[in-house]
Length: 332
Image 1: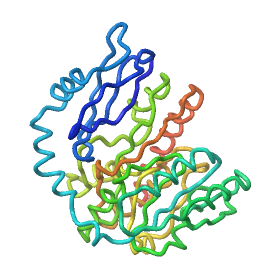
Image 2: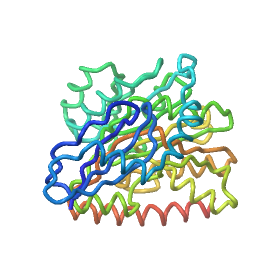
Image 3: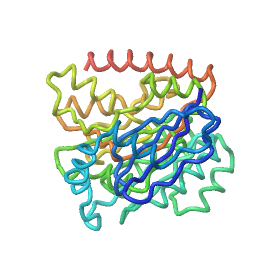
């Protein structure tokens, strides 16, 4: 079983989707004027090699509904189309472990962001030798080599050299959307908002393990609905929202909050689960009475692990991280 993952812009010409014969169906992220609207799924009919524009439009109509699209066009898109020339400068901190090929793709996407003022800080743990430094030299980045192999230590190192008040975090495994930073920073218009996380979409769903991870909730999959902890009815619900928000691939903090709360604390030994090193920080923001927001239009693409053993390991780490997070939250 496998799905073809595509992006679909419906404000212009709808083109047929080619080469679908080896997939069970097509999973499409629908956009209107670059703004993500939602997902549609179109199963492949027997012997089909292409997906026609008519079938695509029928699926958009049936699964999303024109009423939803009209609401997005009238309200959500206008809310996001603010004047970005007045946006706050951002320091993007990228943790790099041992996948140089993924790093190049990540840096290419970061250099194509539509945002007026930002810097890229690449923190290298040194596990890939000189290859990471060689790739970094081809891009406009501030390269920092971190001697520790711990993710939290690397992110703290990047935050320490950051020049701007808003700190955005991602990893070499992510590929950011062109409008990622504009959407991620939009909630910071409210001075009460101290932390923001965004939507993490699957870059591919080629194996059964990837499909199980994506739909089983073993990674960040917040959906297309905006939410914040100020909507929580109780402290327990707020704590669970903070856990859901913690996305190591796609999150941002105000630097003053980051400084007052202290650095990322490694409560999970190896940081195997990508959300682990953001959990305690998001919990601290919630405990201090500040607002954290989830912005679904701040999009980062990420590929789930492909093989069964890695999938089982991720499922195990997810349970361990959740247990430790709840224990730490209860103690505080």
